[in-house]
Length: 153
Image (cartoon, rainbow, N blue to C red; front, side, top):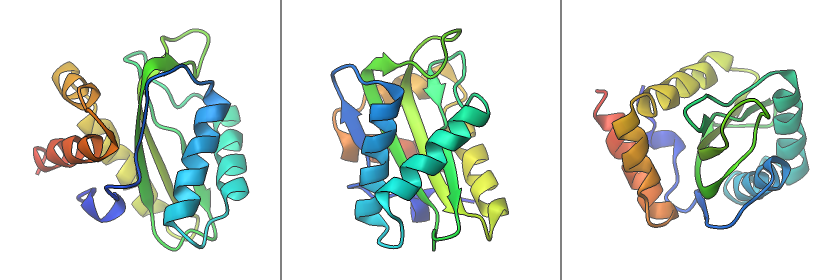
C-alpha cells in the first residue's frame, strides 16, 4: 500500500514556533476540513483528542501518530506536520517534532491501520527521520514523505 493516494501537497503543516498538542490538533483538523469536505473541523478535532486520551500516539524518537476514525470520512487523508520546537504529547517522552496525522473511515478500519503502519515504517530509521525533519515547507515535507514511502516498495 502506497501513501500517495492519501497525501495532498497542500495538506501539510510546518510550524517554527512552539505549539501545544491541542493547538496543533486544531490546526490539523482545520487542514483536514479544508481538504475533505465531508469532514467537519470539530468532528476531526474531537475524535483526535478522544483518541489521544485513550493512549499514547507518540514514540520516544520524537514522532507522533495522532489519528481519528470517523463515519463521515469518505477516504483516508494523511497530514504530515513538522513542528521545529516540538510538541509535548506525553510528559514522560521527548516532544514530537515530526507528526504524521491520519484520518480514516470507521467503515474500513483495515485501510486506516495499514496507513498507520506505513507511516511508522517511513519514520522508523533515524536517517529517515532526519530527511523528513529537513523539509523546508509543507510541500517539501509531503515530497520527502513520498520518497520515504517509495523507498519501502
